[in-house]
Amino acid sequence: MARILDTTPTFDAFARGAFLESPLIRERLWEERYEGAHPEVFEAFHAGSGSTEGRSNLVRDLSTVRSRVRDAAPIERRLIEEVEPAVQEALGLPADPAPQHVLVVGSFSVDADVGRLGDDVALFHCLEWFHGEEGMRVLVAHETTHAWHEIALGTVPPEEDAAWMAFYEGVGILASRAVVPGRPPHQYFWYGHGGFADWLPWCEEHRDELLARFAAGLDDPAAVETWFGGGLVEGRWRVGYYVADAVVAGLGRPLPELVALSVDEATDAVRAALA
Image (tube, rainbow, N blue to C red):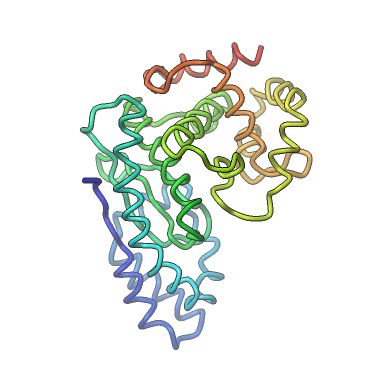
C-alpha cells in the first residue's frame, strides 16, 4: 500500500466555513484553519516549489476549487495506489523505503512537487490542478518516478543544473511511457491539458535546432528557468521537456540503469550526448 497523507478533509472543512466570507477573510482563514492544521506539511511544501502567489485567486473561486478537490481526492488516491507499484517495478528499486505521498491544495503554483517531509522523500500532489483521470495518471507516473529516483540517489539533486534537469525530466517521461503506455504522444508532456496541440509538432520540426541551442546554453544560469520553468523558447513553454526526452531516450539505457547513475554520471552522460 502506498503511503498517503490526505489533507483534503481539512481543506473541505475550511472551505465550508469560509464560503460566506470575503476573499480577504478567506485568505486569512486558509492560513489559520487549513495550513495551520498541517504546519509540517506546508513548511515542507513551501520550502520547495509551492509558492503562495496564487492563493488570492484561489480563494476568490473557492466554490469551484472545493468541488474539484472533492472529486479529485478519491481518484488521485486510487491512481497513486495503482501507479506506484508499477513505477517501482519499472525502475527496478526495492519496495522500501518508499515515498510519502501528500494530497494538498496549493495555490496553482505547481501541479506536483518532490520535497522532504521530515526524513522522507515526499511527493506533494496539488489537487487544484485536477482536470481528468487520463492525464492525471500520466502525471502521477511522471512525478512518482521523480520521488523514487530521489530515493535511489540518496541526496537532493541540483535543480539549478540544466544538464541534470534534462536527465531527471527525461527519466520521468521515459518511465511514464513505460508505466502508462499507449497514450497520445503530447500527453507525456502536457498531461491532458488543452491548448498545446501544435507544441509537439513544432518541437519535432525544430529538433536539431533545439538540441543545439540547449547544448550551447547548458552553463547559462538562467537555462533551467528558460527551458523547464516559466521562461519561453521561441514563444513556447517547457521546451526543455522535449529536449530531455530526446536526450535520455537517445542514451538507449534501461530505466534501472538510468536511476542507478549518480548526479555526476548522469550530467556527464547528457553533456556527452549533446556534444
